[in-house]
Every structure is written in C-alpha cells, then in structure tokens.
Image 1: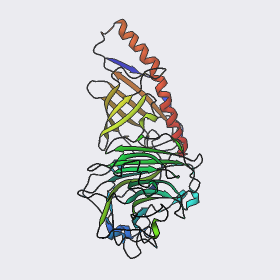
Image 2 (image 1 turned 135 degrees about the horizontal axis):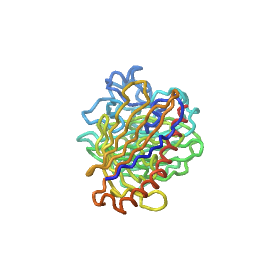
Image 3 (image 1 turned 45 degrees about the vertical axis):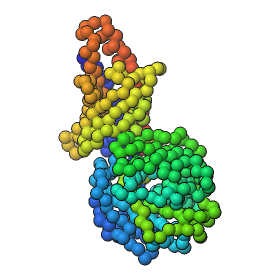
Image 4 (image 1 turned 60 degrees about the vertical axis):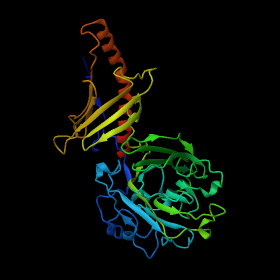
Length: 425
C-alpha cells in the first residue's frame, strides 16, 4: 500500500463564486419540471411558452400527462418530472393542415429574449423515452426535437424518426432509428430507438464558428461525443423545440408536406421527455464529461446515481507520453462520494473516489484560504499494491513514477476549473 500526498495546495482562483470545483456548466434556459401538474402548462407556472406550438382550441393540459417512469438522468439532481406529449388527428397547428403537431419551447429569458440574441456556444439537452405499449408509425416522418429559425424554414438541427421524406425511397438509415440531421438535411448520426430505456441527447451549436457536435448516452450513463465537431451554418439562429411533429405520407418534397398529402386518422402518438435544458458551453463545457478534467480518462459510464454518491466505470487511455493509465487497471469502477461543507457559507468540501475491488482511493479536498473568496484544492492519492513488497526497490520505483506522473494530470484539471470560474465572473 502506498500513500502519496501532493502536499501543494493548488490555488484555484480568488473570487466569490460558489463551488467552482463542481463540474456542472452554467444553465442558460431550464425546462426541467419540479413536480408540476398538467394544468400548470396552461399558466406561467410552466417554464415553457403557453401558446406555442399547439392547436389554438386545445389546452396544454389536454396534451400533456405524467407517466409513471423513473426520472431522466439530468432530472434526478433537480427533482425533475418526466412529461409525455401526445398528438392525435386534432393536433392541427395554424395552416399546416397535413401536419399533426405539439411542441414545447422554453420561455425565452435573459440572453435568449429573441431569436437574434443567441450567440457563443450553447448545448441543447433532452432525454426521450417510449411510452409502454406504444410505437410510432414509421411510414410517417416524425420530428422529435429541432432547432429552427423564426420563419421555420431553416433548421440548424433536427432529430427524425420514420421514413424521411427528403431521402425518398432509398432510406440510408433504418426507419426505426433516431436520425440527427444538420442544417443541410444531411444525416450526421443515428441510433436505434430503444424501448424501456431513456435515451439522452445533447447537441452543441457554436454560433461563432458555425459548428455542431452530438453527444449521446443511455439511462444513467454519462454523455459521450458521437460525432466530431462538424461544420454547420448556424447564422439563422433559432429556438429549441421539444415535442412531436408528424408529417404526412405521399409528400413530394420535404418543404411541401404542410400543404397536402395523406395524414392518417384515429391515432395517438406519444413521446416521454425529461432533462430539457440549455447550457452555456463557451469554454467547451458539456455537463457529465469528467474526461475534460483529467486527460487520461477516455470514457466514463455512470452505473448508479444517488443524492451524494455516483458509481462510475472509467476507461483510461492507452499509455504513452506524460498521461499513463493507473496500474490498478485500464478500466476500473469508482464510487465517488461528495461531502458537503459543514457550513453553508464555507467553500470547503471533499470529493472521495474509492476504487471498487481494492482499497485505493483519491481525495479532492477544497479548503478556504486566508483571504475572502480564496479557495485551495489538495489532491491525495492512496494506491493499493499488495503485490509489491514493502521497502523493496520496486516500491521506491513505483513511488517515483507516481510522483512524476500525477502533476501532469492535475494541471489539466486545474486548467478546466479555472476556465469555469472565469466564465462565472
């Protein structure tokens, strides 16, 4: 057993921000529901616009219900409640007679007060789940989530299911897949629609560099990038729509569907949503990406998530250069426990990382400095090596290895934390 303590208390930043060590990005718009009723969607109690986008003669309380399903991963920490959007033959919106539609838009506030105010880098989050005993009619094209400009003729991204009209008969992706398409209506990623599971999505739009990137996970797993950062003309701006838009069959083009073709009757289509919010990603921040804080981490999957503890499976990158995977194993499970400050006014706290299967652990200790708003972060590493004889030359060599490699990884962690703190100032 080795106990390696980095005795330097690394200076985070002297500022008055709250818990800058918490790896959660700044939320720009929040559509997560704190146990509301369907009737709340008809009032200002809802975080969504009341009159858009649905039939004028139907209330949201007639469209929304709350299914008995577990919360989505991003609802858990905020007490969010999943909600179900239902459409039928009466779901007519404006003059789009061949379309059946009901979609929610987060009430625009702050920097999102109008379409033109969007800038920087934003990540759009949502989770979707299929209602028990229901399936979509995949002869039709469905838009499940989209980001569209004010005139609704330029979509920065869309998530589709069913037979995509613009792709004709030669559907390159199964109709039973979710398909993420870019501003040019090109498919950039797809995944099968799952049943009895949450599917978590995030799409990052950079409004300065005109790029797009997609992230995805299942149930409680951490989001992972599933595309590279790709070119995408986001200059038309737009708003984030969550809900169902069902196109007809028989339309001759993608933009002519609203005026004609066939729409079935006597149907009910539904989707369950959760974890709907928009975050500011101007410093590359996308929530649930621990690999951003430690360069040696390749992927991270959350296996369990309770109030103060997360069980995660971490896969480390291959060795080489200054970042080397820990010798305790290339893939390990860690139980991460957060110990909150004793006082609500204190910035101190402890994160404890216990490796499952042995006694190795890491402590991240945040303490306050002598000056107001000053925080320090101390790392301690305790590695379990029962195979190495105490006092041996091998023990000394291992100590030297850890002393040399640990600071390189910590430098990346501190750099990301400082970026997040500065973004809040």
